[in-house]
Length: 85
Image (cartoon, rainbow, N blue to C red; front, top):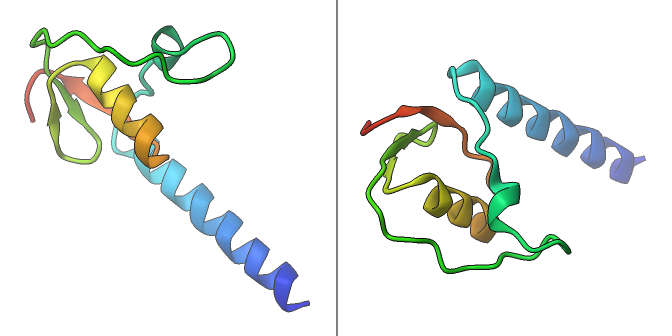
């Protein structure tokens, strides 16, 4: 029973986090174009400066680097807007 309660708690916490990202006005970046067909990260983002403001409050140099951070940390970060935060 404790395991079931813990699962429910973490599931609700995860849902609240996801809803918080979208409630901040963010859209999810299209990270599929930066992955291999098997879902692994292909790496090698270009270093062009096309800033995006993430829902984490950080200016990311471009969408690829934002996706790289999402892939490395597992935290779903949305794009609040194009440009700096």
